[in-house]
Image 1 (cartoon, helix red, strand yellow):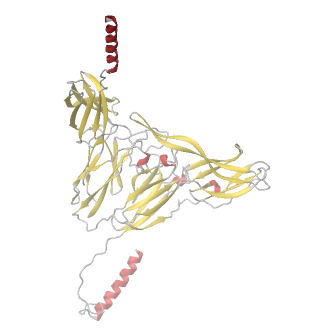
Image 2: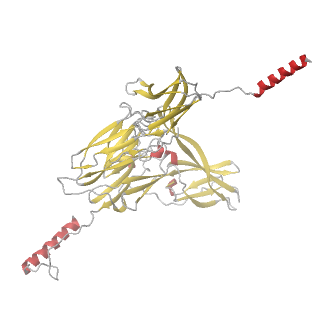
Length: 529
């Protein structure tokens, strides 16, 4: 009996042990809030799962070095906060983000008992401003930026003054900080200082517009917004003023303006399947693409297959690897041949990259004939509703080394470059309006190295157009007081001789005339890496 009781007691004890779970401590972890912001942001770090009473050191990691000397960059750390874990293993600490390099996220590490316990990241965002924002002509304006990067794709900015490219600035050797000094010139009124992202370097098998203003930020490996500031000149030796409103935008024709002939497609009747195209085998997006089929089986469906590529940016660590193209194709149209095996029609040129595209005539999956169509870049423009910007609509930009980068000139001065690698040849950019009263010009030319190719019509790529627009800046009308006049509009004290002289002078003059800042913070970045 006693033996049975003893066995029962052991079984009950075992069952009790099985039912009571052993407490398991979670793995250490940390979170940061917020996860991004400019230098000087207050960050809260919250930890959990640490040993009770553990001393925790919070480390901030950054990069040191440069790519000019060839030594490259190394990761270094500094302590930004300390904490002690409570009985539950939780702790909280705060620190202010340093004025440091932006670019890729910074590692934040929690170290306990001399070992790494957990990690999180924080992204430093760019912040840019100018100072002062007004003053007399000759004032020295400082353009300041914090949070600049260190990689090939985010360590540069490019600056324009009234749309004229001044140069570039780097942040990798100054802890992400940039200071640029500009003299205020150009007469009374507003003047525009624009800070553009720029690429430091990249591969040479594509366009190489390094360190020049990027007008289409969507083609960057990491997107940074364009930031524009206004400086007001309040005193000047000149009485002329600048304004930031335009009107009467128009296209301009020059001797190098490209003309594409309208020619029908002519079928080839040699007894074999043939595909021919009209208009000299070239055209711009949306215009007719005439084609002719001959030599096919009667009453047969033929698919016209359009061959192209899809583009994407590529980065590896801190290197810009340019743009990678992947072949693709799509059905342009389908048509059924007539009783003689022929078809004659046209389709709109698709929106795609500029350059040569192979068109295949496909029957039941087999390629029976081919032709080549050259998609020519085209540009149109509009004024914004308030006249402060010219919006350029580019279609058919190329993707190859000598067809992809297009330079924009404002009043015959280089402004920056655009491309459309990631949007199949189509992009819209904006050009700010600024200047003195009169005619102002915008020119667009191909320029693979970041500089305009001025005589493209005499180059190996004569089909790449030079496109020009102009618009007018007008001084606002002002109301002034005038001398009281008689009902006829002429001062009563004028004699007849004076009246005749005044009329003659006005007539001759008419004939001559007829001949004659607050800080701006970058939003969260988008990476295509």
